[in-house]
Length: 354
Image: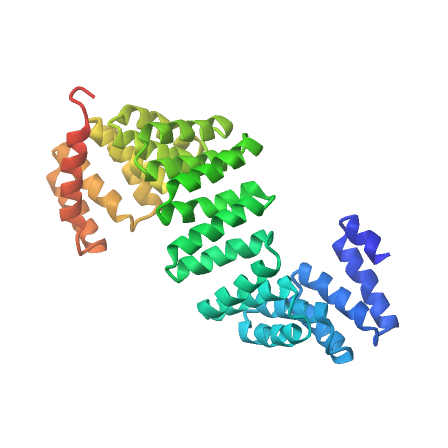
């Protein structure tokens, strides 16, 4: 049967089976609705809408078909049509929290933030454990600049959602950006307790700790992410940047060299290696990775400027002028003044003899 195929993981087979059932009984609304739901899950949105519309012509008060139709319209970017479907559904079933949740989604997509907040508030008032609604409500409050309400809703979503890892990764940067890094770290630590071998959680924890200025703790979290997944590119690049901030350019160089040995086509890593070698006083060694970065991205204004500094240190003033001119052309507002100030500050950080 279609049911057995679906639960065996054969979505295409289930759709085929239900399609035959619909052909045999085209005026049976339940079959049309079930087929529409499976087609929506398979991302065959136009076909799903056709069958759901047919189900609603057969039974205009069919709540499940209304909800699925609204979701299909949202997939197609038609938020206002989705709202009409949900208004019909809520007139029939005003106490269904899922209907209020999806009305919140539709209003959010339509740009009606106040309306979205009202719908989501209603959803969580009916079903207080509705974690997904709490999370979306937190995002809506954040968009409305209702910071305290946003934090409360995000925390409630975290406390209620069983998918703690995914939710922590979604909520932590929002909590940190909203000025509550302690809550962000708490959410991530709870997730790490459940899934300690997931490097993304440790990377997110490092970012939160770094955002609050705790460099040593951030370094530890980055290193744990890299222990779990060696040469994890975002962690390497961010840890290398942190090592530079902590006046450890040699450590940054080692990290970047190992990454580039595996991923030489990453322009950001090549450019950072060039800068790191400049900080170590190795202008000659800086030239190659900076040119590699520019070979990968000729519009990389920072790499042009850094190459200019390397060439200037090598006594090749004419070539340096060309690199600085290209940097200025790409970033005309502040390229050279910014680079000059940045380099004075960064060279001041490097201990003598490094």
